[in-house]
Image (cartoon, rainbow, N blue to C red):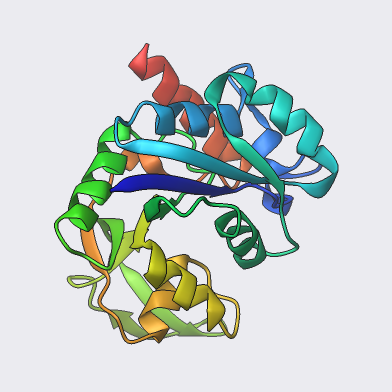
Amino acid sequence: MTVAVLVPAAGRGERLGPGAPKALRELAGETLLVHAVRGLRGAPSVGPIVVAAPPSEVGQVEQLLAAYDVTVVRGGPERQDSVRLALAVLGPDVDLVLVHDAARALTPPAVVEAVVAALRAGADAVVPVLPVTDTVKRVDGDRVRVTVDRSDLRVAQTPQGFRREVLAAAHAQAGPAATDDAALVERLGLTVDTVPGSEEAFKVTRPFDLLMAEAVLRGRD
């Protein structure tokens, strides 16, 4: 089964503050996008990689990723649009499709391989997850309404994996925007399986996250 990865990387990353689009912010001298693609290339199962870049930065992204054998397309205004545009350029030989956030730049290749293994074992869709460790409160304004039982709660990460026909159907019937592709598959009434995620696969969203990512890289060194 040929495995392709789609990397939606067209977002601005407003919460990181002013500057380049999020995927092009630097971490230890290289962009988040380069770190993310290098990690994907470290997973033996990964074949084609398609990156949906900010429309004004397609040429720059092609240069940045020239050593990694990727296809770069123009991304859309929303994440969902970027995934759809990247999915459209895959060749007919691709059977399994992973969708990976460039902001999860330090995801270990072992997580990628775990997702692929679950798909090859027969799953329609697979999400890496971590248990929720904080106490969670449901609130109304500034007032706590209830403490949520966290025993069956999980934090979703990427890459999320899908049989190609499942992901295509999910986006064809997408409806309202969703925060991840697994939610679109859930709307089809299909089962989404999970595999263990990684603490290193956190999403770089705020300036503090960049500091944590730098610490992870120092630890790896």
